[in-house]
Image 1: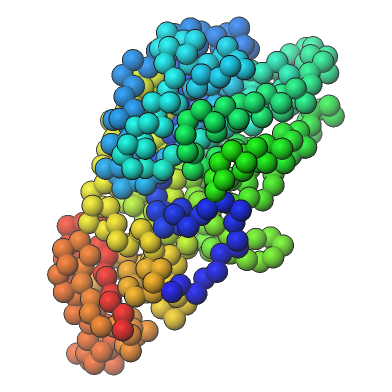
Image 2: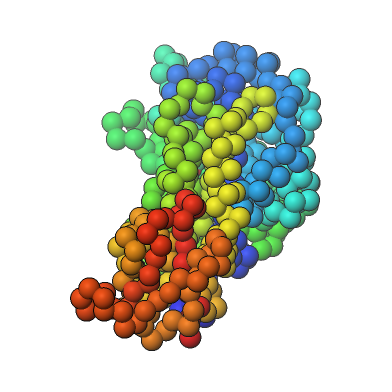
Length: 430
Ligand code: GLC
């Protein structure tokens, strides 16, 4: 058994740390302007003007089953979809707002179709729910609000009542966790401090504004076992480093315990569909992100931003295919795996994972070495080794001294890298 003890979580994270790999989906009106999901804030678009995206919203190619099939084919085991992002638009049929998908030309409850299709593929299902809401009339204006520079912003904001907005959130979270069957993850987003230099009346927002304790209490009552992130400003189940490759397993600030964590990453920088973004990561980078995350005991939530037609664009499809192709042969080094025990020293250019039961070690050759891989820590522990993708034997020679003594305790590798993005050596341990 792995010797790493995680800090206890209120929700059920056992399945989560086994499954390791999920799909994040950011979908909303911002798919139409197609230049970042924060466009309403960045370009300070006022509600009357933003309304054109609502009026024209019609993701006619949306097919929840296709989304679910693609997630599964990529090797993902769960998904988290934006039920509402910062723009305030709801992808579900909420009785507390008119600003919802059932009131667009599209007319269907997309959340309902998503839940059913992903469940049918055997995937676990989560909802992202934005704490920020730039559409709600009671949400006070702060330094990231699209109305921040209106001449009468302060006067407008003074009339707003966050208590009413907090109640709205409780009502919507109740709907989300009551009307769609079992929900495995609730992903709140996010809390922030007052920006330095911003006008005095523009405050940041945190747990007191969201009334997070009540929100969490509702979620736990309606869906016992649900996994909740930390972004409502109260420690819950998961820590969520964003667009960042952490260097070590994150620890709890006060107690120093290892936490349950999930990195969220994008294919190209933005979360919502961004037509002109040219910063798409290569397949090698994507696979390396997954490996490096699990090698530090974490999960990867990999984001897709569907187009306003409701489907994945070709670049996203290709990225998912890269995961699918690699996972088809190498999933065993990801599912049910975690950080390797400290006795195993990571060779240069590699990352290690180890099965939870401790019986197998996986050596990911991120940089393919020349013929040999020196791993003296295995001398007493190795029983047998093979490449994971084709189960072909990889010889380990504890006494191979053909050049100098340093060459002992090495794997003997083919000179040419096998035709797989990142080859993995599977070691059966004694
Ligand atoms: C940030 C962004 C948001 C995105 C999220 C994903 O908080 O505000 O656009 O949804 O990160 O982690």
